[in-house]
Length: 54
Image: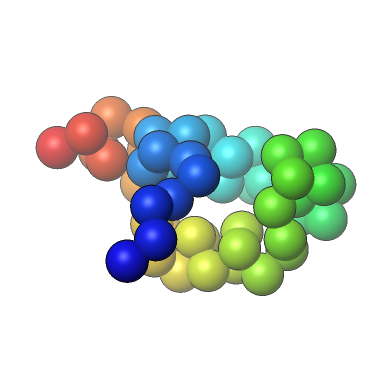
């Protein structure tokens, strides 16, 4: 399995950023595709950074 470019905590931070800004804009800023953000949202849901560490 390929190692992720971003840690789980970083992904959750990007998702929180995507909650308040348009997804295409956030994706471009972080160098990922829109589809990645949607997939992460499906995987991590409503978690916050502290939840991922547990």
